[in-house]
Picture 1: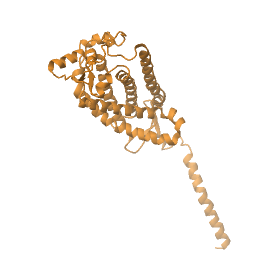
Picture 2: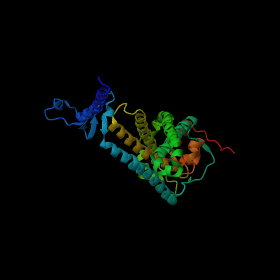
Picture 3: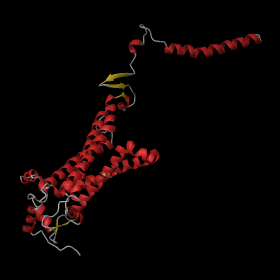
Length: 333
């Protein structure tokens, strides 16, 4: 073969090789005809399913086949707007109500003044259970608020670089502190459940609002160890806290017991319980500090003034006297 012919043959083969992929691509993108043997065997890439767009995957985790989930947009709207309104609205609303009440009533004083004699109301174990629950709840509330309001409030103030580690640490602290919170819940249930069972005398306390609105003072219905208001706080913390812990742990192990829709519902419940408990705890903190004279001493030192015990928990104090459990002491100098 002459050299010229050989060169022409090589050129033709090269052109044919370059044209083959183009022809194959044209065949690939060509729409199949009605009589194509593959038409009836084609499988759609995705199908509508319960208002979702679900694809097909060959891996075991079928949740990854969900391409579009309209409920996700509703959850995101709730997460970024409704939840913030619920937490902020309830917390600010409770604070405003308490501020108005304080302007009207002021600090509720001991009507007969301090007797100068102390009575043990809560022992060390009681106070440990209370402060374990309270401290862990306040920590979770703070970190939860950071995670909820951080994007619209903190990022403009401190920037993304500072907020990123803050959010990461807040999430870790939020999860770990849930353990002492649950321990505290179990302790207060074991210690105080018997004294927080509702009784007929609680109805009188509720009808008179515990005498809280009486500026004359001293008009408090008789109560046992806990009055109706304290029982309401107890059951709110126990039931609400238990629900919050259960939903929180389910959020920590996503998809362990439910799918995407269930996880979104769990998050909604967790957020609403947190919003309600934050508002309730704000009220509890108020009445235990500036709202009532001598109230903080019960969980501070454990001792309360004898007149305070007689005025707010007369029946409990008299029962303790009859049983010989009361040891009246003079305050330390």
